[in-house]
Image (tube, rainbow, N blue to C red; front, side, top):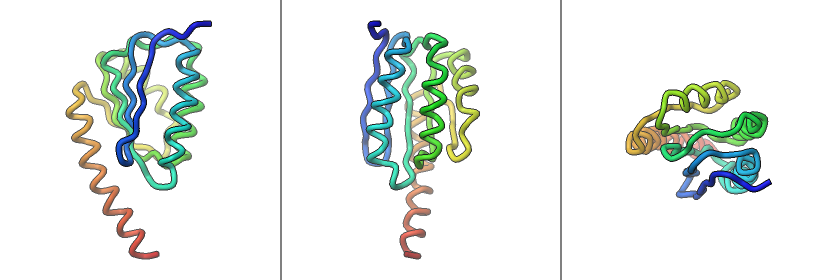
Length: 139
């Protein structure tokens, strides 16, 4: 089946950035899971952050649920510490909050503005940096 919707992924420092577009089907979600794991594997040796820009995303078909669950469990086990979700609707937020219930090690915040999401990541990043430097001082 042909993919519907698209995404962009990039790494800047210790931050994984996702930009999602249009409505996704299972094929797009599966590729996103694979590519996210591949990119994040370069970050997972230290705590890292992620921002998801979903302001141009139109949700997805219900069959992506298990792919998202699999990715969220993987992220939780592979050192993601802070996740900023930038959404454009209450429905998006509600769907995402439900999928994030599996997180035990990840702090998630939701924003309606991209600048607010980046500002929050910057604030928690500085606390993460100080924790890392304290840990490395003890090594």
